[in-house]
Image (cartoon, rainbow, N blue to C red):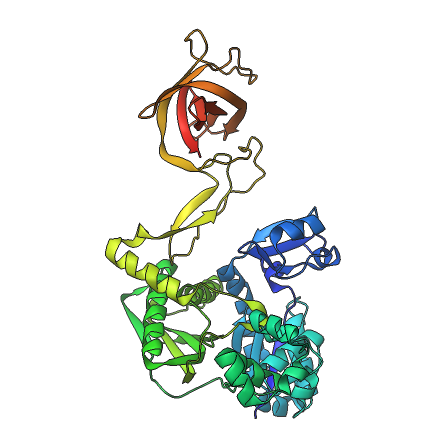
Length: 505
């Protein structure tokens, strides 16, 4: 069994977003914390904690949405430095976490402990905090890195034994085991293998092997087989990133389809580019059957952006990328999707394939996902992105004084509907420069929706944007109107004209 070394940069998503060490910061994905700063942690914020709970623990918490491509881009200089200074080949498990076979580097540096010291020293040279660990398996080595320990050969199972079963990364299994009175990894490892397979299935059997200090897929940085390799040639050579990322997504889908048809998964994936001047650049990414097509594209994008920023893609010869290649390494039988180290999750494979089929039939924008954005109005606070695309547009920075308060509209019209808002005498309701409403609204009519009596109203909320730019400035006010027929509207007045922007209910 080969020894595995792991290098770890704590809180790397926080570092990648440019946060200061003195501020409480949480990086979130899907309304849950994926990483937080030390100050936030001292206030009680924890990984996997729901956003609302984290904000209640730390009222001054700054929230940053996770950008995986940006994390890969920020981590790439660290990876290249380690390849040049410590070990020639390694693989990226996720941004901030790398792994490599320990045998060769340990011999070169004069022992396992000396190798780990060199690994930590090389990372700290780049002004990053670092820890390293070594064990017989990747899972044990990753936990050892968190503790900064070297687990002696043959003792990984004993070293893992005191940990709670929750560290195995299978929440439903951990919950069931705890109900059965099995609370530690050692207790779970002591169960008969055949009984575990019969009771908990393939997922439980894989976790049982991990608990026993076994590696289902031994770490290997190179496999010579060319089976299932997918490639995309660019004619002429491509210099822009967006076509490359689109090709990476297409290739990833093709690769996943091939592996699924063969009933196999790959332990890792090599993403390589061949440049027009004859050079070849490659990066190994841990896969283990858990990365979606979009997740692969995001990782490839981050690496390509880092190579572009450092000038590796331009060189001295003819510019441009002639070929993009995805090569799966160390294939094994597919027994279900694996859990990621430390709980990372991606888009379910079946959802992604269904969306791709709909896009193929109805068009690229037939399936979109909603991304939160900045802004004051309801149409400004979200934007739609075609499923599978990476949203690279910058998010407008807040705060947003005058932002529309809750409750938020149920539907926002693609374009404002002409409307009229009048008082009890049939005169148009106006809003003064000081945001005063001289006469109360009595009736409202919206084009295509008829006329109704006003039952209640709230506002106005002023909006004055980009006043310094004559062509782009915008001055208006919003009001919420409820009517006697049970409907509710979000009204906008601009240039003394009323419009219906959205509808409630």
